[in-house]
Image 1 (tube, rainbow, N blue to C red):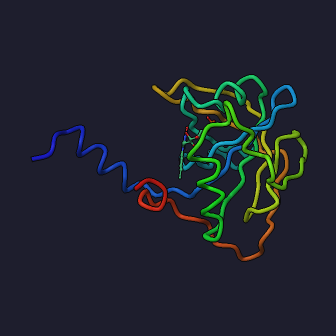
Image 2 (cartoon, rainbow, N blue to C red):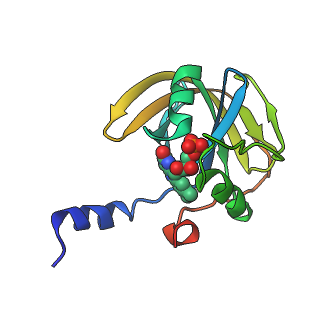
Length: 159
Ligand SMILES: Cc1cc2nc3c(=O)[nH]c(=O)nc-3n(C[C@H](O)[C@H](O)[C@H](O)COP(=O)(O)O)c2cc1C
């Protein structure tokens, strides 16, 4: 029989997510992490939330920079999700060789993504071992018309 903790974990595993690359730049240093825990939060103003683990290198960068971009991945972008999600930028430059541009906030916006949202942090909330950053979307764009999002499936990233 499974424990309550196991059941909570299994049930939470059935919450569906896309896969996103959350990028930022702080004091001239660009970095990004892959995140699945991303959601819309408000129509007016347009708000989104991103849940970032406190030990992530990106965590303090987003907190201190007060900006981030959400790069929305499509099914063809699995390698990008792995690139930003399976190693830390603490000692390596994950943007080396990665094409990007900057928009309103200056956070890196990937050339290879389905769509992007450029955000400024309007508040942040302590959420256990994560921080929930709420961002107001200042600018956005769709790169691939009719694009489908990459749906998060654990076995595609963690075996
Ligand atoms: C598909 C996928 C989804 C992830 N989702 C999240 C997430 O929602 N929040 C988070 O903090 N980390 C998430 N991670 C883990 C970070 O991307 C990973 O720890 C990354 O190496 C952190 O990079 P950084 O230390 O350069 O910030 C995810 C990883 C993968 C592969």
